[in-house]
Image (cartoon, rainbow, N blue to C red; front, side, top):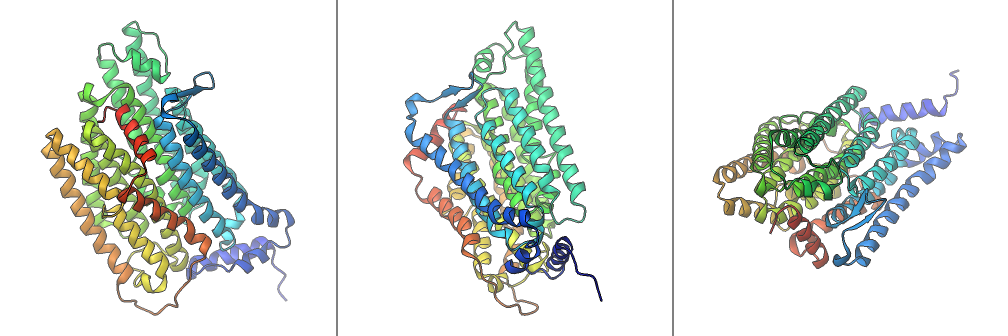
Length: 502
């Protein structure tokens, strides 16, 4: 007679079944495996709802602050002026907390259906909360060094979450992510030190507060300042997945759990974007041709690399990740133009956050059912997973810049700004590479969604709690493309003007 198995053994068994067969473990079986362990059972019951409650409270708080603080009173400084609530921080606080609420709802809905998630529930929930606290504080940082420290803190919180993925060697992927991120931030820190040297040589008081830096930057530029800006943009560009240091992004996004991939692509991405915007607020593009040229080169190179890699991609999560590289390239090109393209860039960034969250969460659903990320192994998804397949198609259309989504309007504004700037080479490169990405993505994804199935599978339903955040993301994307509410449009214009936009 075989000895009775422990709860942990049953969890491991359920996980292996989920990995091999590609089917979800029923909620009753996951709950039963931890029934004998009281504290773990309590955590399973309450961790998800607690995360959702905190995320909803955070978003509600920032919406209230946004509604009750007139434009005339911003910026608002607090914490001995180490933190600021201005148009830039307000915009991204609203975006990342809205996205995080959707991710938290998805996370909570998956707890009862995934044995592996239930097994590592407490550390994942704790690290996710710490990640979001660092994100919120970092977005409000009014000091360049403080902002740099919060970006590093989000990286330290995210690395263990990446290690919980289903790759063959998840710890290796997590270490590579941590190594690349640390190297990127080291380059950024070295750039900050070069700016310090420049200020010292010009007899300017060294201060990393953004307002004081902006006043000091009015003095003549020198080689130390240009070198520092180059290192900072290169380091932050690698955090954004810009070429040449982009290889960590596809590997990490593919290997990480879907909720973690969404956190990295749709939330952490934005704190690095804010750091770049802060630099451009201090050193405007129109006054610094070196900055514009570097962003333009990195953007065009990233679009080229993404177009080549999308053609060769065989995993739908990796394909989404390379599409994120191309999105970073579009953003860099738009920022290099500034002026008329600035508003379109910001609309593109905001839309991209919801697109990436939608795609990675839906990709997680496909992975749960089919047990693989391989495009060729999936066929007729729209018949097996009607709701998720449709949402995945909607996300792909939004990612590729189709109307009526916000990404379409944003791309049109960026291209218009490039034409008005007279940079026809950048316009040609961007249009060509986006066309290649569109064709390559359609060639891989559309047969996966609508192609004939090799073997019949029963249709799989969708729980309302899992579907709700994805529907919310789609609604926001359509709203941004059809009609941007007045207060949000004003906020976008204020941020655009802060970086030299019109």
